[in-house]
Length: 83
Image (cartoon, rainbow, N blue to C red; front, side, top):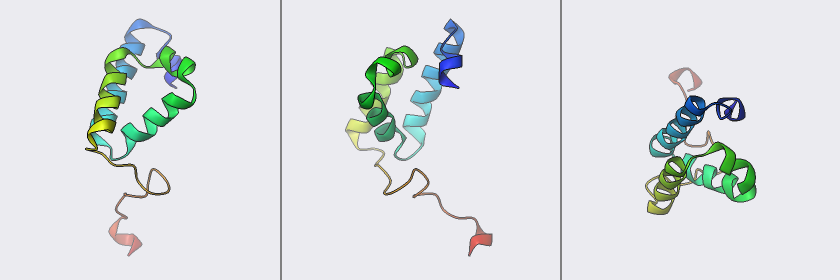
């Protein structure tokens, strides 16, 4: 999906803003995104703008969001019907 958005200038800006928003609001997302970026920087450079990457790096470095143990859903609180 990101590669499709990044094909056009407005799509690339929208993807960059959305990644930055996710980094600020979803626990662990910044750490995961930074790990993905480190695994294949050439691919990610084409998808993530400098502003989005800077936000991801800042959030990951601040420790404001910690990496969840296990899967990205590890910190999700189950619905009441799961009780």
